[in-house]
Image (tube, rainbow over all chains, first blue to last red; front, side):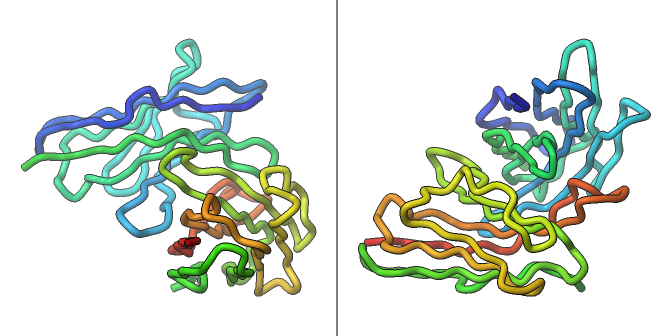
Length: 111
Length: 116
């Protein structure tokens, strides 16, 4: 079965420091991987995706993600965190038409 | 600015009552999804449609939940009768099944349901 795992419930980082939110995947075949962000009392918003090609994918708001096939990982990264990046982040894998989401990681960026 | 519209935003009801949530997907999108979000279970896929046809509703409790798309501009999720354990935020999302933007879902703001 296709699935993603987000091992950290929460990640804390100081503003200006780099951040990483981890995701590992388990899929059969080529993975289609996604990151979404959810701000309080809002729906999820698409950040970026990996379909094929370059292992480093760039997305919205300065975020990027690195696809690593040997480690079956798709970690979300940003070089310099902002307080406004504080939100809930979801990794997802596409299976047929469906997106299967991870459990989410709450990112807290402190001033 | 295209967006997915959900109504109601908030609903408080009593156990046993019927609840209907509505969703207007983005014009031109041919897939529509219903997700439920709770603290305990996270995001669960309840049902989805492609070109208005229901393709998978295995995530729904069949005895009380039903999902329909009477036309391309409206998707509904109905709970009858509602129970306290149905309390959650219900999200509708739409997207395209083909093309370079496949998998990029647009979510509505959600319907927060509280069943007393």
